[in-house]
Length: 332
Image 1: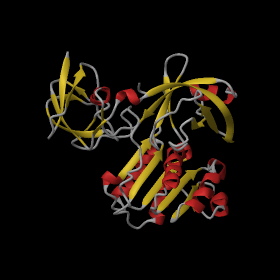
Image 2: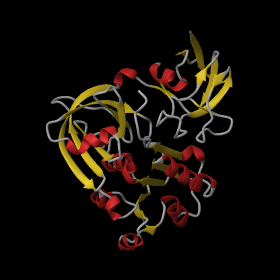
Image 3: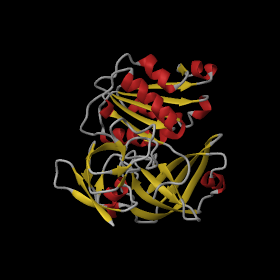
């Protein structure tokens, strides 16, 4: 049995099979709406249901009066009211056999994995998007591309070693010449290129990866926007790629870097902020109306930053863009 899903105010509709969630059905039909984790954690896919009945489990990420489309199962034909949507070509997503070119331990618990695609093949993606790595048992893991789109013959991944993590136990053993199956692109955490609003980027740990792609892409395209980057970690060792920050300080006019570290000595040494990233936001900004915020990290960290920006500093909630890192198997 299948249900008809219609986008309110349009003639656009698509089919959703019984037991299939609305987001997956939309993506299969070539209709993309905001999403990130696809696990009901980040809240990016929240939207309205204006007609029909759905089964939608409770979630802290679910705003009042809305539903998480990645968890939303229709029980009848349904009319939805997404925050935004656009058509895309589902066949643009490609699978590659990528070869390990370099595997660097950038911090005690972070590997920077550089992959090369087969000769003559190029990956098409937007800055900020992610890929899925297919593991031998058929499960997948999601990682953001840290390189900008114009470096299309290679892929750079920043991988935190998660205790007990299936893939992160493999990563330290990978050597030049080993291969991985990857599929991309996924996600819509991407720069709003038509905007000239000041940008605040708030990241924790390897949440730095997609923002690195965004900022490198801005350099390539000569985008002129004020940018503040707040990068959080336990100590300065967690800021594992400061060389990239140093380049942006030279290449991006109006760029400001704020390291936010739990270690007071390291924070002082880097002329940074001693504490959490959400408190760094509060300390640096009295108001965020007219800004855009790009936030990447753990669910708790993203929720705390959203509260500081939207509830306490007046940011338009539609201008808070997030990519939530949720460990474990990816939704396929």
